[in-house]
Length: 290
Ligand code: IPE
Ligand code: IPE
Ligand code: MG
Ligand code: MG
Ligand code: MG
Image 1 (tube, rainbow, N blue to C red):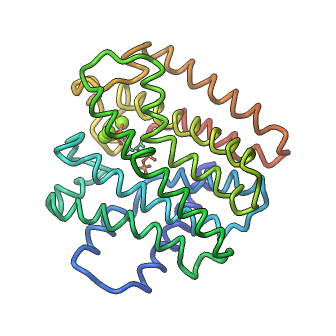
Image 2 (cartoon, rainbow, N blue to C red):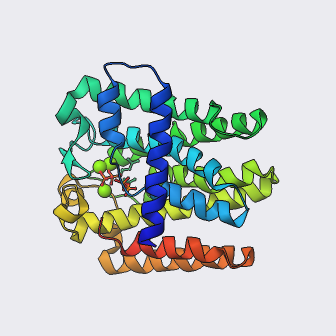
């Protein structure tokens, strides 16, 4: 699993670097590159490749889409760390983008990464039909905006220091983190021109993978090691973040994750032997330490 993930991370970075190579220069490019490279685990690209393998999508196509997704993810992390949001100074084992480059540059680098994601999907490096590209851009934009990441981040901040119900916490985590995974799972079905019903099926799987990743992230914050995680841990409690751990406790949160994994595996079983790829990814997401 580790080797496969490393290869996908490397290939996603090569795809991003090729894209930069064709772009003009600007004063923001250093901050943009700083927040993308060497970058994180690239787990979203792995999910794209795993689900893509169920529908026999070309690897290069999946990696190019993964590069676009990583731009959205990197933007969301830059903004998540800003003083007006989580106020975090360390990200991926180095100073957060606003610490290194200043707040206004960090905001603008984040904005640029959002639009860059759409540029990548629209570019000639992605060798699929124009109509399909439009559908991907539409879905990725929807997952990133007020119905997705931005909307979920709003809820996350507005729930601080409040008693929030389990359903509301799950809805918030599905939006802020699940939506981008729902794009990763839906993209292969969109490329294959599947029915709306089948696209919805994959979107729902993605929402739950994202929920799993976020609960695991909350578990790392609760018990994890800052050095290994590459970011400060123990912060959610101090900030009074509404998480399933704060509501149900550590053990019950893990039990909840086990249930999510069993449920997703059951749903994907009929897709044949390739579903072992996503199975290993789900276990990795829960048991990682960073
Ligand atoms: C961290 O995401 C932020 C969340 C959405 C929970 P990742 O755990 O995927 O972070 P990187 O990309 O590997 O740094
Ligand atoms: C971030 O969640 C979710 C995003 C959409 C960026 P967190 O605030 O828990 O992520 P970390 O712990 O700072 O990486
Ligand atoms: Mg946050
Ligand atoms: Mg944060
Ligand atoms: Mg966290």
